Length: 218
Length: 277
Image 1 (cartoon, rainbow over the protein chains, first blue to last red):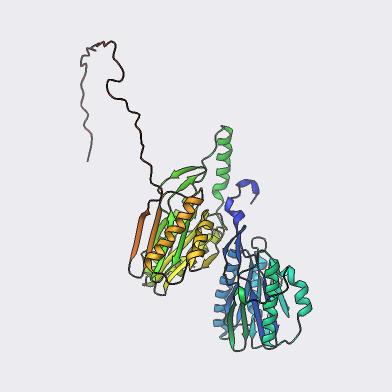
Image 2: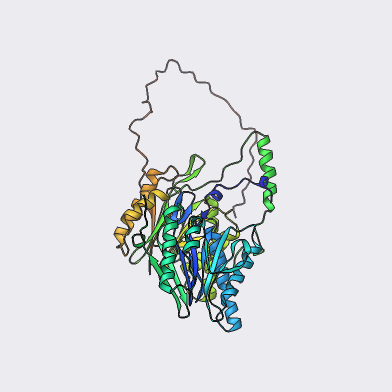
């Protein structure tokens, strides 16, 4: 498909992207995922309350970033594939299986897609896990950050993360990281969505703009 | 995966068959010094909101072809199913055809399941089709309706991403309309207030965006009833001319009058009966 075959349609340049800050962190007994809520098309914000934490299964969620259409489509396809898989094995799927399904799509259509999903959840075998699937790689990490806003908080998360945090400390860590990123990245903002997954299930929470912690701002 | 669908080839990817032909035609036309006609876009302000009893959809009625208004009163609220309607912005042909294809497939699906169609089904069908075409179908849609689970409203972008929200705006006038919504929207409004708010949002788009204009169409969908109000508000009535360029009889004086009769003879007369059966 060469460029001179047809001129690029205008609306391609207004593709809806999710700007974004997404983060997933393991704690002792589960994981906490967090995301902002801004979706932009060019300079306009088209949705200021989008929940970018999408369920793949009861105790497995993924965080979306990059092109909204690509990310939503991958999440919906993997949701379907995981449903079929969990019926076939007659058990809850492993987080690793979900992450592998996402990785397969991201790798196979690497040139066509521009979305990055972080997969995190809890399963009986290995407890809370976080997988990054950027560009089709698959790696298990204690925590992962993604999206345009993540560049601003790399230093913060590296310095502040500790192993074996409690659930409460982990949620605070996630909210702080999101707040700092939303404060500095123009493409991230709105409200913060936080999902906590442990052996009892997934708990969704929304932290409104005025409830976010205040850091020193000029 | 659908077993019943109309005119849709499910082989993978976009069919680029016609692109080479189009490129050749374009080159030929340019050689003659002409330019090929621009696709008619609908400029547009479209919006929708969820109120107490259902959904209100609104749209302006201007269709533009470049900088010229091609249609002063086009209909942008398309029928999908008896309880689901869809407003379309972007390329007029794309929105028209896309909504017709999905309307057709949805009716077949509904006959197959034996149940009235749901808004989420229409949303899935639209987003999967638009994603398959990777944004080359320029249809930005506001889909709204009432089904067994209550009123629903979705916005669907040309690349295939969707958002489910209580109020949405799309099109070139979307920012003007969204400003009105963000100021005055409240959950669970009454019908009259909801209609007034949508009307004001579209009016904001009409008066502040060059790509939108003419009248305001509204579509109010509730559990048992659909009110398709076209036009709901003629915001831009054509003005009445205050003067007349017609001259009275006798304004021009007649100086001379010469009559020359033409004496023609009938040479041949033939009758051919027309088959009007």
